Length: 213
Image 1 (cartoon, helix red, strand yellow):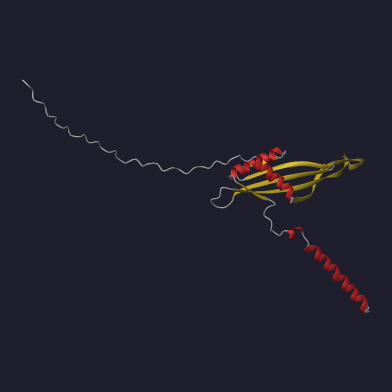
Image 2 (image 1 turned 45 degrees about the vertical axis):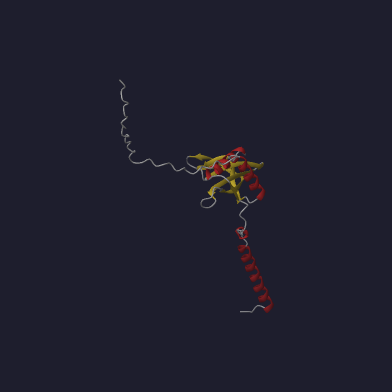
């Protein structure tokens, strides 16, 4: 069996290493590697309100912008809104807000917001017409029709700081003007088990003045 020249063998090995290295580098670079978990202000905001008041303000904020609220309670609000940026492009944004108390014994609430964007594109599906014949089977006719279907082509979480800043500012507009604080319960005097018995004072004898004759 003839041997390959040393130069050819070396070039082949270098090419194989280069291809493997490229494939390895492509597999390593993924989108979630940029998550550094160092910012706590992009998707959160603290309000001097209760969980119920914060989530209610978030619900009204979404409704004011045309979002269809799909769930709402004292701890969670979700809503969806559709956009049409181009003729054959459809975008849906799903907004989620979670309201949680800011620490034990605190009167403030943290609102955690997250928006997911789904992008859909129009896909044409060709349908060829066929005619059934008893003895022969089915015959394909020369004409065909096409149907349009929306197919999801991308999905990502929105991370624009300005987008969330505008939403948090709108929540603050729907919060109550002043938060009423519940005063602590006042101590009430404890009534005695048995009411005191009133003892009548003894009657004092009043001396009669002597009758003058």
